[in-house]
Image 1: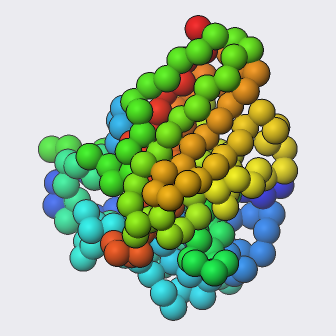
Image 2: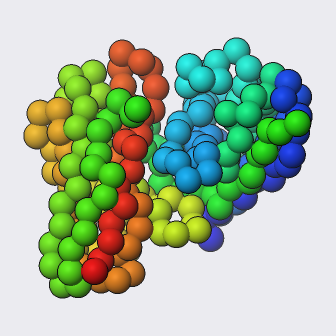
Length: 124
Length: 110
């Protein structure tokens, strides 16, 4: 079964740091880009970050640029999100998702496998 | 305020058809493929449509996608109460170098 499972969420004070992890199984991890998508309570989906198959290319939403770092360890079939300088507005459910990307002829990107997510609450 | 605009809510009776629109611009929908996601209450999003109009295996043909210019549309026929969910469009934006999602549309099957 193709699966991604997030962990590492919790309650953290503003200005603090937290590292999320995502464990992948059931597919060849280093064949795929991976992304983090978050959802604030009662709100819609917000893309956070994407990393390509070998970690050589990353992209971030403006709202997290300079504060969050995405990385992966293909040997461990794992994706990470290092979050620092956390703010109240970072409070959300964070989903890990497998990405499908390519050119045909224009660039396309969609997410075909999603994890259930892990909750991050930033509060004093 | 999302760059991709969706109606906040739509509703229809069981067995009927509904469409959900997603409006963007030339740097996103006008140039890149659109995907659609279904999020049932309390669950993770699920891919419904990719490449504007393709369905992953296991998605019934009651769900369809189309694109024209800078807008895309999700169609659902033969509505069932189990289709009640939030629906999101998604695409890449080459000006922002970012993945975009619409604000989401809540479907109610009356």
